[in-house]
Image 1 (tube, rainbow, N blue to C red):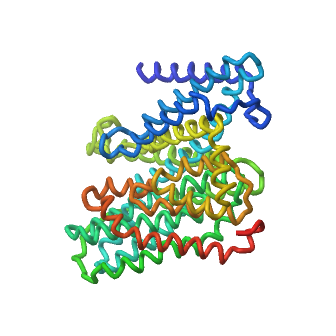
Image 2: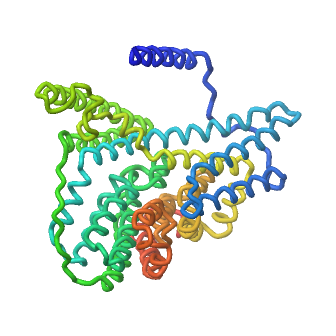
Image 3: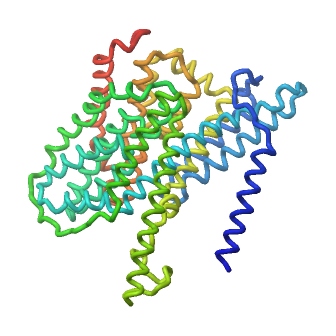
Length: 491
């Protein structure tokens, strides 16, 4: 009876939503011809800056105050846009009345593409985790009896090459568990291995549209084509290899005892991996050949994964019924132990990083609001007009370590300064790897700090900032030299 009631409610909800799609007219998201006010010297502008700064202070203090980072920025976004809308609505000229609505819808469209793309990618990553793909890789590494120095290099290499596909956050967490399992009580090794992993994961994510949120934003904006990202491969290698070589001298060649850890992949694990690679291919083809947003390919791939998940669930149910009839487990699915319950793809969907996804909502709308006020135009003139593109893009990387690369890159994309391909690739590189300068400068660093709490710390990372900065400077120099032909407007 309960299931029938839920099914009827679901059907009614679907019908209502379908009617709403027809009931509300389409509203243009074009923002080029909208009448704008300069509010940079208005009280609303000053108040918006204060609100955004206060919200971001709470984001930075997340580890200390234990408040999820999405909460303050979502509230800040609502307040900022309410103030902007009130000013526009109070204008005598009715042409201004819908400006705030059009601009916020423009920002929401950009967020929707990012949200759906990441939701599909996260679901795939969670499904691979549930099927035991990452556990099997970790188990193999910790059972080999490698020396600490070998583990240092292996985790770094794997972090560099896995992050372009699986994203730098997931990769850093996976490799950090290996370093912690092998290092055990050797906190010095665990700390330095985690630093190496964070730097490698961020560097690896910089030359792939899928490796970092910032590269994904640049790709989805259409500024850099998919294949053009790969010219950043050698600069990214340099960014990681220089600090890695320096730090490796502080790692002993001790051989810890091999762990006897076993992990096997569940049925269909490799099929999910293949489907994920196929989904990435569809996203690239949709963008390059069909001129569709990449998210269309990702969501189609998610649909295929859900169909395959249905097949796994049916197989699990049949297995459970066979065991139940043999008297090994209760016939009811609810009575089966957790690890024997039928696979449910929606559980993997639920396990997406919703706090992170909501944080992106708040950041994109906050920065979009500041742009509507006029601050991004002022910032663009100060940075790209006065400092010059090269210096401004190097500064973007440094700011990424302090503030976070996502709002910084979204601000740059909102400014859309007139830059050649060499400069767009430079800002993609610096925004991606600049966060490695500090442990709080990237999602990978913050996540690993939480995982290796008390071992990999802000101060432990800061001790090696000079080596990481050398890699940062060298990667920029290599890009300027190696890809000089892309700087058509000069360096």
